[in-house]
Image (cartoon, rainbow, N blue to C red; front, top):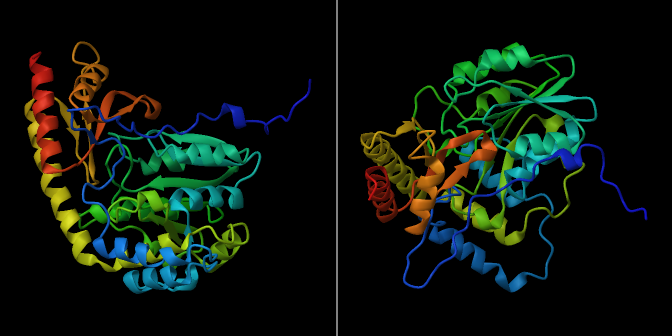
Length: 364
């Protein structure tokens, strides 16, 4: 009996596995700290904007997300015609792969890079090439060494998920300068809103001054609109034109677009979230470190916690914390089998995790 057969390579792709969603139990409070969601939710102004369009859900969206592109342009000083919006930045990453990769091509990502990169690469028949990291951080020299005549694209999450590390802008510029001009450099700046380092830039300057660089961003993190699936990209006109040719005509819903406009304009909500994140990120790193566990320095809204390979393992810690309603993210699929990623949550959640880890390490 014959049946449809997937394209070569499709069944070689490991499906993306999201962070665990806890199941609430009677009498137990549960904290989901596995998906890097903001503990504050979206701006109240974004919620109001979302509700205001609820009476017109029968209407198709405006096909170019013009209102949102213009708001992004005002916020970042960009030409709206060089901005494209998508159903989350994930959609845009996949559109880039479909536009610029084909069978026999290669794309480069780093050892612990975002898992959507190899999925998008392999889905179009291209080869995913891994460049080794140094201290859980992108190594520009390793990426440049991995370039071959088949290389067409380089994926770089900056800051990186799940490590929380980042690449200084001078190193990003050195990477761009070292890549062949036909290689597209994709800078994924999903977590840039949480960074307060003088040597960091999300990449807009590089996009504005080159013909072969794009930067993507999302409303799922600091803006708290993960459920609406909305992201955007800034790029050269010729890349925006090419991607627009295969983009779905109504890929961004009207409620998502207007909620995102309100969110990006509520700078007070963003500043509050960023300040809270920085304060508790530092506190968590210090307190968890006191327990004898290593924490990778992070600039994002999560911390990466490392456990011993025997005894007090990450699996045992995960099970211990989960029983207390504290759900972190195991990272076996990211090649970090002895680590857990913890989203920075509410003050209550953060303190409970430290208390739980203290009891775990003490054998209580």
